[in-house]
Amino acid sequence: SYKLQFGSYLISNKVNFLSYEQLIFHSTFYKIINNKKIKPSVEMIAKRLSELCNQIDTRIIITLRKQEEFISSLYAEAYQHHYRNDDLFNSFDKFIEQILNGFIDDVLDYNKLISNYHTYFDTNSIHILLFEQMKIDPENFIQNILHIVESKSTANEFQLSKLNVRTT
Image (cartoon, rainbow, N blue to C red; front, side, top):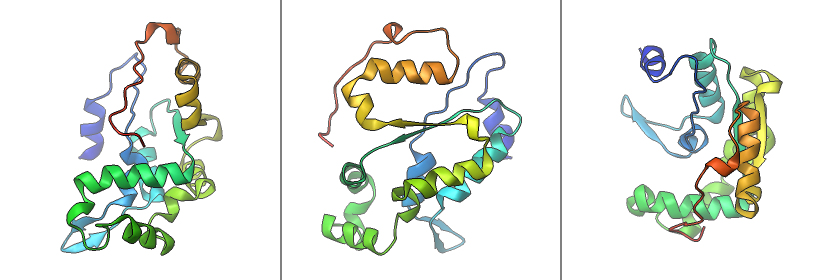
């Protein structure tokens, strides 16, 4: 089962840090299940994560980004791997049209996004950080994460790189 597989990745008596963009972005891609196009919702992802983590001290860290930058970056990334050959999304204009038709409402509506996690996790375990703060002051951003996970480490112990292969 997926719970056993997930559990096999955890290390006891350690902070297990799961950082995976797909916890949100997964809802922006269709999956083919039983010959049907299915688009998982953020709510479904939050629920599944809570089922996996219900016996574990869990901290949810959601990093929000200005929506216009998020949309541009998401398209640039998704175009390379998914949208190039998809008639619904193979241009930025078509992508924007799909957004206006509600394609990723559950991702762009940050109140709804956070609310979905509040439904399944304790309020004190949910932490909101800003992507722009990470760009401006990465050391402080890392220090905030270390504080959230109650680590004794400091941001100075991490080698930070400002390299980004894309501009978005």
